[in-house]
Image (tube, rainbow, N blue to C red):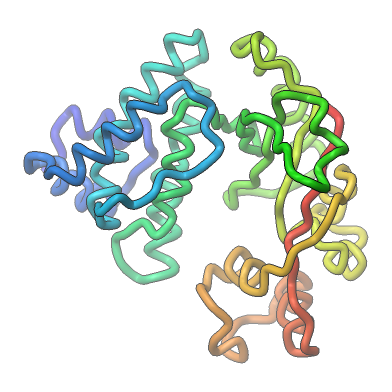
Length: 277
């Protein structure tokens, strides 16, 4: 049964309907040792600007859901202590509820197969500003990254699924990011944003040149591409794997492009790009 405290938490995380009932049941029993261990791991790196998801460390998917629920108020309090508005904090942490709903669409049940992604939100350095999410991390020092290793910090850009991608919305997000991070993280100056996404695959831009996706991709200088055979299918159709593609809809131009490339023997890729803020 959802208590008043549960309701406040679920509002913060945008957890609704059946997912709220399932989450309330998890919170109505004492946390297990794996849950406590997961919470400790999140607590130890809160504020560290971590760039990596946490490992499972023996905790199950359900135990990680419970740990995320129990730890989220600490992440929210950390944001507020920095002076960040509760609204921005809530918009950032609301990805928990969104991912629960996506999981129900993908698997037909309560769960969170993207729990590791959400551990990044709990480190206190990933924020949703308007349409986009921005992840403040140290610049990679890998071979082939010379275009932006001169900067110590970068913003990793992520695209939540819940809305359009019009140039005006994207412009507004980047404009907010340019003022947000200098204000709240003045000791971590950023001049470059990066994006690793199937939406930056040049094939997609060439096939849908007038689309909002192409407009988004063209903002970035493409550094390299790596094969990611299943990403386009997952993010377009929310299906894991490449089975039964003939059963998927081809109602939109994007759906047709995604499937026709695979039909033709092609492989979707991740584009890795950067832009100056």
